Image 1 (tube, rainbow, N blue to C red):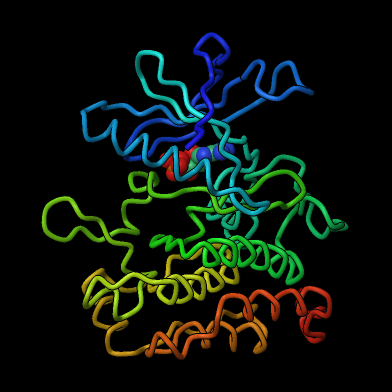
Image 2 (image 1 turned 30 degrees about the vertical axis):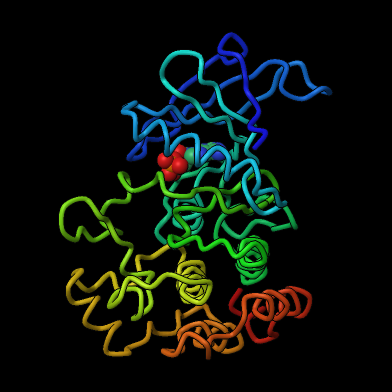
Amino acid sequence: AGVHHVQRRDIVLKWELGEGAFGKVFLAECYNLLPEQEKMLVAVKALKEVTESARLDFHREAELLTVLQHEHIVKFYGVCTEGEPLIMVFEYMKHGDLNRFLRSHGPDAKILEQGQGQGEGQGQGQPRGQLTLSHMLQIATQVASGMVYLASLHFVHRDLATRNCLVGQDLVVKIGDFGMSRDIYSTDYYRVGGRTMLPIRWMPPESILYRKFTTESDIWSFGVVLWEIFTYGKQPWYQLSNTEAIECITQGRELERPRTCPSEVYAIMQSCWQREPQQRRPIKEIHSRLQALVKTPPVYLDILG
Ligand code: AMP
């Protein structure tokens, strides 16, 4: 359905940004993409292995991505299918994936970003040093907004996690990946059988036990994303092995309240982690609640912030 095609000669690769299971991601300059700009920076995904089934998946994904358009979903510009590799063209998000971003703005960050001054003034835009409560709420609200959109289309993501969100200029956050990130973060996935990799630490009991993925299982994962945001990108159940984590989740143990997380936000996480899928709070309500918290952040945290 109306996938836009870009000519190979209009794409000039600059350097590699990352690597995923299906290929590499490069920063590139793209000419003649938008009428108002002669050239612009884009992120291109190159499909490394072009088997017939990979080619089919590629075209199916491109059609899907063409339909998904929202301010909190990474913009998809089109494909280039002249020869090989097959290429997908996306908006470039200059701060990369959200998990790395959180870690680089947390307590374990040393000098990950240049010019990072301790205790410097933090405006609305790019945070220097550690993220504040206000930043975390802004990030969470944007991910929730993208999820409200996906749920409205009855699209089930299945792999919502901070590693699959991207951060752009001025702390803009978008949902950015629909299944190509399984290599670099391979410890986040658990291999079952031959090739299936499951993000068990983000999955509710019914997905782990019966492989049931729904809008409600995405809500559970959103709760885990909130936990990741408030822990500056820690891995859920990092102290446990995959089999131990499965045991824990299916027995109904919950992730603990992160130290910097106000009780109002932890209550949202817990509403995502109801064992009964229908009991989980709808993503629309979660989004509204987060929006309200962005406007009136819980007061006591300004002291910690
Ligand atoms: P992926 O295979 O989509 O997980 O991408 C691998 C890595 O490339 C990600 O973890 C990001 O750091 C980077 N990346 C992917 N897409 C983009 C983008 N649109 N803008 C900037 N960096 C990206």
